[in-house]
Length: 270
Length: 270
Image (cartoon, rainbow over all chains, first blue to last red; front, side, top):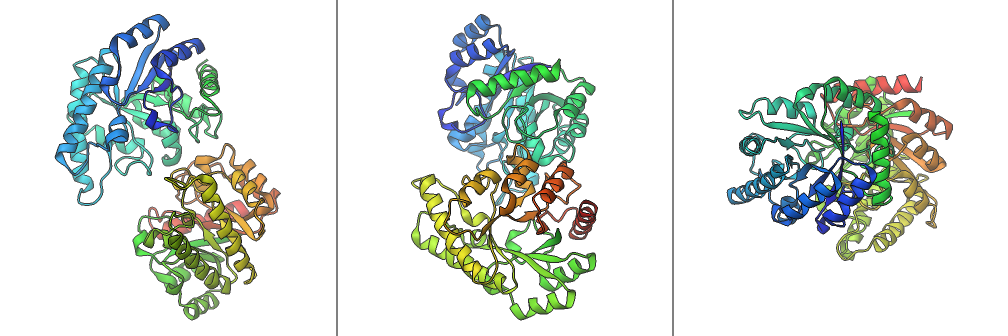
């Protein structure tokens, strides 16, 4: 398994679960100094990524891009893939498609998290899932043209009412025509929703594409009460070889959160 | 420790964490049949409780009232104790005071949960805590006139930004002039917020007034991944003799959730 840590380029996301906040140059330098293998980037939009600058930083620091978030479209514009307004759904899809392109250029997947939205009002669950299924199939196919996958993240009950549990999301993804979508298992969300986190990961199996390595309170692993051993055993059992990416709060500060994460990563993957 | 189970009298709360939904007569009969010692009631307002009817049901079934929720004021009217508008704060306090009176008549405390609101916009955290402190001191004093306490419940980060952790709430309560407020420790919220649930309960100590007995996913204890043993040991260590009250989702249905709760209660308090 491989290590990654988050960089937010969105000042409006302050208070959110990202470790580094001072730009790509700062985040990449600090990630590399601690020995991380990759960075997960949260941009306000695809256009905010200076591709030449990022490539230079990755080369200099021998880093990879683990993934790119698309939640900027929700945070900045309140766009989602299941919005009742077709024009907004289109904007959401275009916003994500542009990030699929930028991330794809670095061999990395984009993440559908908060952009999935929720069903409510006049939108039925069936309708929302139909729109979401079309969108992730299409975006997954687009990711394939870059040789990457698309990541779909089940969120806890406070953040969506579409899929909260890994198993339910996996069953649904298997019904879609496009098979290029993988699950992002976020251990913070799972702590709230899963009966047994390790068994849930075993059920996701080969569909698992990315892991958010966060403790029960969204602090660095080791600073909440999640029992990590059985989770790591399940990941090894299903042959997971992807990233454990620290989408965590920068507490007590970014440096400490990052240091504790890499220490935990080394401990659990030794 | 004593057992209790929740009855909601608020159809608008459908989907919420209450076990019985078919009125006081139904809820009391089913609670008693399973061997619960008390019911925790969630009314839309104080006036919705028919005092003579409830007293009759309690006598017939040999039940007590464990507590009454006040969140109907938030759910039905969006009133809170920290609302920027003084007229709304006043309505919130009067709404709760009326429930303190009804609950107090049955020797039971009222609960301040969602009615605490949150700080945001032009309201600073200091301002919100000052309003909340005044309100809980006053309502606590009023509860004392009935020979009961007032319960304050820290909620998880998605439900308030005032106090999420038991220890922070306990430190704050100790600064208030009125000492008649106790903490309600909800194990579902604690699963999200506490580094170590058992230690947090030990820190609350004698301030603990009520426990919501819910697993990590708000289902009956035993149906999530919370490690209950150390929590029960901490409760015994601090001499807690109050209720373990099932504020849980009625899943897979009310009867099963109730049966599993009383079985878990007996197992852990045997």
